[in-house]
Image (cartoon, rainbow over all chains, first blue to last red; front, side, top):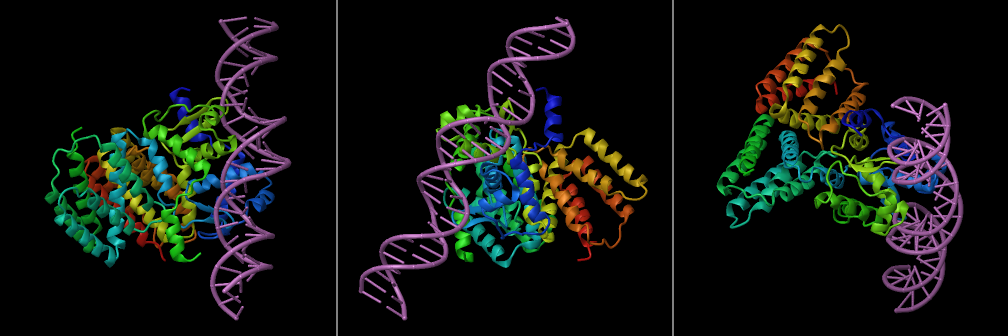
Length: 229
Length: 229
DNA sequence: AATATTTATTTGTAAGACAAATTGATTTAA
DNA sequence: TTAAATCAATTTGTCTTACAAATAAATATT
């Protein structure tokens, strides 16, 4: 399979297996407004009859949708549309970037900068308070403060409260940590990190999206530049 | 199922079905470095033996991974890890936001702002040229220019060349258009749009991430404010 | 050497059966 | 009457077996 054929194949041909067609039909329930996030789907047995497919094909479709975080299935209760996709799909997707440090760093950059901009609009007083407490905890920490650092970033990511993309932050930070765990950091400088977190915090407090973005960008670029690669 | 129980259930319990466990094992091939993007997996029959599960369970896992864009399967050839997840997973995920206009707008905001920041570092001369041509095409357009507008945003999103997240742009713009198609825009002002696109272009040409972000933010906020909702 | 046909490989689909999880209904005991 | 225990029903979970479909590779024919 040469490069040109591979490219065409991936872009122009969508596989029309039966299970894919079942996925389409289920998703169309959402797209058409017949059902919405939180609603229950019919049981497997009923869907089999309704869609006129075998049970294995139906299960392939439903389990795929569950892996994508679009539905949640439970024995004896049934299958429900979710209202947010969570972190699992991203954890699995990110596995294809394992070993590709540049891609992981860039994914982190683009995601966190987008989420912090959104957070500047949407952050609650409670989350601002938690950020403040986090900064104070980092000031007082003696030794490893990476969990505190991580929590700062998590608070921001979740404060945007976005059902599709907020879930990427945990798997992304996990993958980032795992990718970098064998790479020495030049200098860990807690004071500098605290200062940068404080700048981000103040921009968020001021609900200034551009300042939030700029300070987070400064911080993430600084983090990147400390990598000796 | 009350709210507290639902919350705990979603966060603390990961379903341990066999097909999920198979997914873990396959993903671990990537995480451990045994296989990488582009590599071929063993056939279904071989994986059945290796993992000691039935064929339907194995298929559930493999088809789920394909729906997530992590593998690509083809009759007689086999199953391969992909090097980018593409747009299909996002198209399906975004279905749960159907009807939630605020969430869709916010997703667009956070994703496009993250991607444009990345583009400022990574954009090629070719893509800059394409943006320039796109702006010129919009200036000359008579009548509907929404496809040209859309292409401007697509070029930027793909110029970041990120294998995990670039795929969101098409489904996102589709969902955005679909959500807004029955909402009247106050004033379509081509000149203003061209001007804003030009500002974004210039920031990208200058490879200035902050300016790129700021101009894109200005543009998307302007677009948002024209909605009469 | 080029074309056509056949074979082999791998995924795709289905039917049937039983198991596991667990909520809801019924029965029993206090 | 209430609480606890037990049983039944519902839905998902897993497996075996069989055949179909798609198509690249191998073989035969021209």
